[in-house]
Each structure stands twice: as structure tokens, then as C-alpha cells.
Image (cartoon, rainbow, N blue to C red):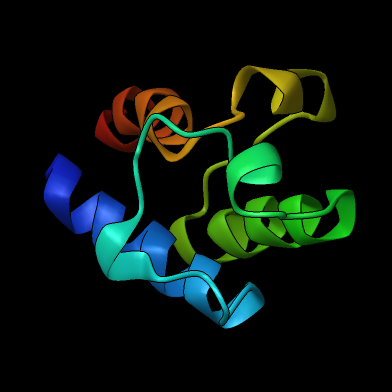
Length: 82
């Protein structure tokens, strides 16, 4: 799976959790919780949905490393290859 495909899946899950976010204009580097008003429950739901959809385990201790879509993709991409 390439990064664009991975991004599309994550955006699909994000859109289901936070339908008010304009996915077409989302800045991958923006902090989701600050710029797009994602609360902590939304963030947890996103990570849980990504885990369920992709089968990638994301330990709670790693959550803080993924404040943006770019950071989440950076975390997921190498784990999808293994």
C-alpha cells in the first residue's frame, strides 16, 4: 500500500468521526486537535478505527507522536510494509 492509499483510508476514517472537517482542504501538517477541533475522544476513535481497518497496533504511549495527519502517516507507513 502506498502513502496515497494509506492517506485515503485515514481520511475516510477521519471523515466518519469528524464529518465537519473539510477533507479536501485538510493541511496534513496541521495539528488535528488544535486546527480542526478534534477532541481527545475523536482522536482515540480515529486511532482505534485506523487500527481496526489496517491492523496496525498503535500503543497508547505513541499517541502523542501523532498530532497531525502527516505524523500519523509517518508512523503507519513503515508498519504497513512489515
